[in-house]
Amino acid sequence: MVLQLQSILKGYWSVLLPLSLTIAALVTVFVSMAINFFFFTIFPRGLFAVSIVLTLPMVIYGHHFVVKKNHALDLEIKTLCAQLSLDAGMDVEYRTDWTLCCFN
Image (cartoon, rainbow, N blue to C red; front, side, top):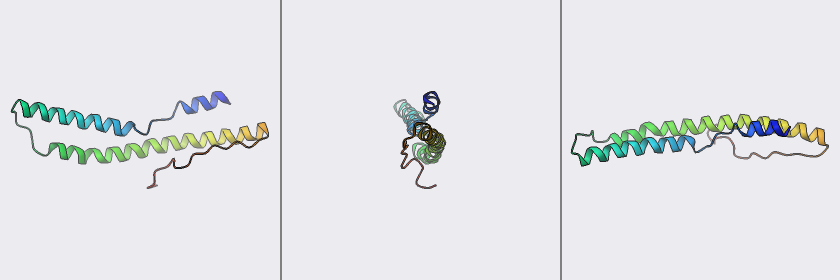
């Protein structure tokens, strides 16, 4: 049972993954804007604002995807805890408050 739990726990994704990828994309846009500014090349104005508007849905959807994936793993852990509770003859409780997005 411990091995099953360890394999489930290895499947968890970090909730910060979509945010960190988006920050990396925005830093790339900012650096390219700075390079274009210092070398006096033509760079479309407002590209940074457009990139923010385009990446915001990516952050929201990415966070939603990760939370839904982790919630499925939480359900598997609850099943293991119920099985352990029956096998050991004691109460085992797995607490996962606030694991889903608030807009579900």
